[in-house]
Image 1: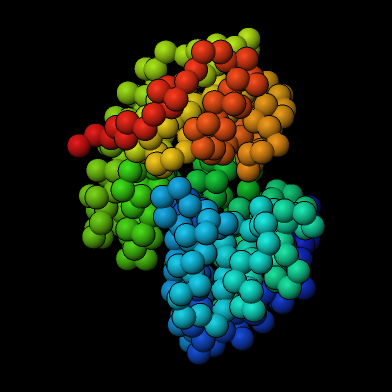
Image 2: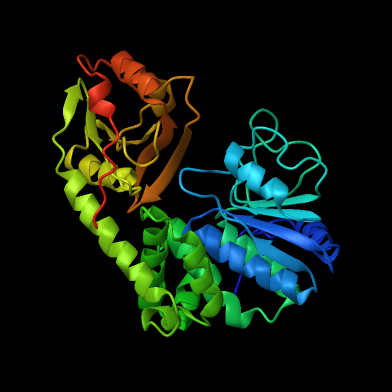
Length: 371
């Protein structure tokens, strides 16, 4: 992979930080290492790259993925991590909203494109490799690829970095290597693989462990496009399920409170972000809230999306653990926030936005998913 052609000599991260992270990995020789990637296509590609690097160093790595509705901070996920035998921990693409120690006393490396220290950031004692501040900011699989390149023959793994970049930033992202890497990896195959991995994450069965196994088995994106590895057909089933649920849930008639449009539906699939995208395109002057009462029992998962600059976290309120992101899509900026709340708290949030007359029945879980 050609990583030049940027104005920043330290791109994608300063060499001293890369060297320090490489020493961390070298110290993992012979040790049990937990590798915890974000369950998105970029995170999964990063996870496979890290597993390959640790195996080449003689470590004994094991991947752990959050389950349905979980994240790095979920008590259930932390409990499972705590029971796994480990002498070191590597976290990929999930370090920027850290609320406190993860597994106290366990040497930890975080590889992430963000860099938030202090409140709600990285805790003291955690080693961080971040791409923050070096334009164009590299996604996590690119940063992981550069980090692990001295430990493996990197060329055969370049397609994973390209795949993660397409997933995180799109196939036309202004990354200095992407055009050539996509030509070598076959652009159509990479885009198809990203689609299947995303569907695995959104499916009601949460097939991210299977998706990671498919990446581990494949030698190229073409292997996946042409179904030459076990598990691809199951990922295609996940995509059909998600497509059907998006069509169904996007037919939900919206409710309005001023310039805020609310779509309430119930699905066991994680389709609320996709429904929000569809309706934001139809109503560019509104803030769209796509709220899914059926994804995880006992809570409402929701996504807010706006094409206009709006303080979405202000709309959500201070009680919700939401993240606000700004991404560039076709030259336009979309503002996105997401989170989840117990139904009573969600109803109070809506009431504060001006939605009247909603009650418990409106946020009942129906758990609809295609058979």
